[in-house]
Length: 206
Picture 1 (tube, helix red, strand yellow):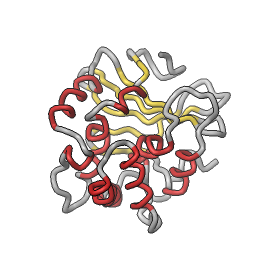
Picture 2: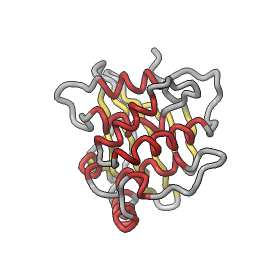
Picture 3: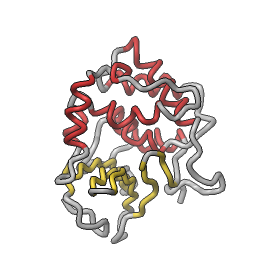
Picture 4: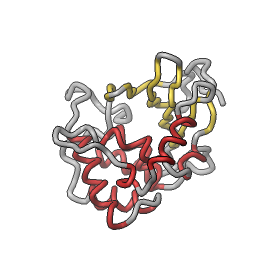
């Protein structure tokens, strides 16, 4: 796989990993740790087993293959998540690829914390619910919402946000009895972090 203008990393399609046990804990549990009073995240919050989480982490963070997740929008833009597994420089890059542009824009990066420019809740939902037709990448709205979730920067997410996020978690395999509390933990973690200047605009606002 090649992302024009990104670099020479050994990129590979990561979308099949979303269906593997242990993926969502690896991808989202760090968010739950973001709140001031947050408990240590548990794989069970995501309906997963610790052994599966550990096993999949070896694939997700393999220096010989950097998984890539693509979320294409109906407007032709694409958010691309790259597990940047460079020796000594591990992290996750969130890129915005716009039609007609030769180079992607890195809108955020995660290296312990997250730095960059976020999305509001309604913008995130709009992208999740409007996939591009016949485009490679993540096409299920629930999975799209969860892949984009680390970019959420909205202290005033609406009242329906926990229910919508809980439904997305249920759709990817989290038990109904656990999904809502996990959704609330994720939102609390997102609200508990500060990762860019409030004056910065959304990368998709134009």
